[in-house]
Length: 343
Image 1: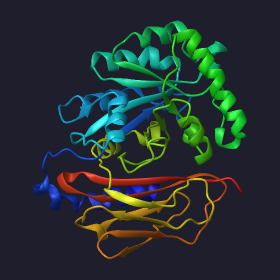
Image 2: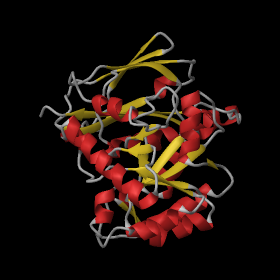
Image 3: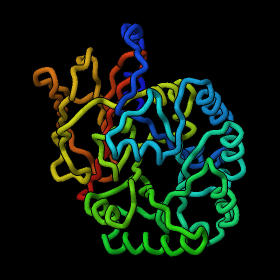
């Protein structure tokens, strides 16, 4: 992450060459951001300070952004419809009490919609750091709030058997039906971890989309059941990074390889084809999360991009981020998650 941020800062010096090319045309791109806790300083890795969050809201309310419910973006991506530039959705995971006390009043005052993904076990267990079902029902009545599915136990589903993961989802289904009167049809994977087998199963369970957790702008070229989200915490929520993210846009790509995030070959061979010629492609930098230097990028012709690195991913959850400056001082941002289950 540190090397990626250094790269972004350096490349920002050169992005002004595109400023005269900014045209407000609809695009196959949207940004989905995610939070967990608000003003809970004991948990800095999942928390944003209230000063940080207030700065985010102020930025989103400056008239530049098209902030919409997450389901609006999902329906557009599924239909292949373009969206206005800087279209964005807010999501919040888990159901902590600080959402009710600190985030909801601020978002409501700013008239900003958001989707809240509730993990049911912590609420049922009456964890003192979680909201109650009464409070969740109160939020559910707010037209600005949509409730999403986040499973029951909030365990690492990628480490569960497929049957146990589906049982966890079914338990949550029953609780949602009892407490809310319906089962949410958007699913956020706990920890953003998923497998293709799990995706195939839950897509058949009437979920309209699945939300992961890796840095990238979303587009119709990405798997609707594993859409990217930019996560914020205290260390990565300064207003400079926030502006960079909410102004980012998706690379126009097709023929993305590999098709699977659970590693079959390590290191993976990554490649994609641009659907249109992108000016300044040589300025792209791609950073695997486990390396201190960028990956090697090979441009094959004017549209094919292949990414190579020799160091295998260690066991666990990883990612690669590719960024480059684009028109209007907006960054193209492409990312992929990878899960190594063998080590």
